Image (cartoon, rainbow, N blue to C red; front, side, top):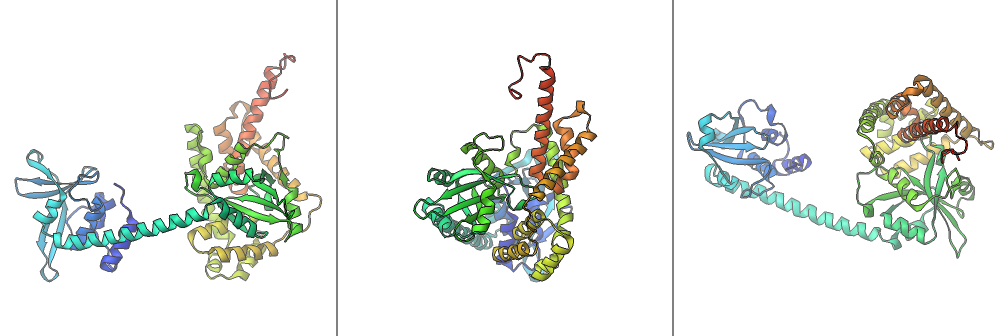
Length: 469
């Protein structure tokens, strides 16, 4: 049985004010740290017992059981991990009665003489605290009913906001630069059926870790207004396809023609090799953005082990970098001028700024409204000069090629494996981003396979491999 410590702390504060820690809380998670007697009030013990059993004292559970040892008249709490605690009710002087628990090591005779009883017998018969346990249990049940009602209301609100009509209304009202949310893959498919054409947007906003992002282009038949919806990263632990939340940046031809033109020039209806971009590929690309790290499913155990180490390094590196990307104090106090001066002085890249802002929003330091306003001001202050020749893209591609060459020089061709490439690319994670690193690794391995096939069939020009034909 999983113990919700947030629920415990909330109810602790509600029942007792939360000024002192309930020493019995160690029974929930840290039983190994209890080395001697621990005591508390019957109310505190009642809270812990409710947490352990969810209020079901008459039914067996997978966490704790009550055993009576006839010899010595001992009452024992037996946990699933094998730990045993003797429980005694004692007088506490001015404080009234106390409950005392002590780690217990049974003898062979105890094991033979013990019998299991419902926990209700401990509360009402042995400890005689049923009149104390009842108010605690009732308070938990009132809180659970309240939370259930709030959850049901939220579900109704989500259902109303998830209809296709609501999605179309949101898209119609959105202006250029606004980010909207479309919930449920069924709504994505419905939009495609209505004429929203799926495609790829080439490195939107010049993100350093972005190559092709999925998007949708649409022309309104009656008004002629064109719209481009560019997908945005939003990592969430959601599995159900009908509840996935897809975020899109809106670009409209009527309210910001220049910005719309720039985005449209980056939109492609097919992949770079000219092959059609299928609806299934569109689904997969969207899912990678919202269900990370779902893209790791299907990889070998060796790959997953390496990736786990790599992600750990990324997290550690992220914590170091975040301290320098945005000044924490300025973010906390909403000192916009100091934030922008810091970014301009340190020449922070757009990709790092975006990730840092997402992190601060996730942790609650930034609310969505201020974050959106801050992003606009940062973008205006750090807007790059016009690049008609596409020099920025050329430099970006040059850096990628340079990294690939550095990695290939470190690894002998005979040892060019998924594991070796991943380890060699690890130092570049903070610069490339995890998604770009995975793509580069896969392409290097594909190149190795193509070269191997070319050598294999070099002496048989009449039968080239399909990949090279």
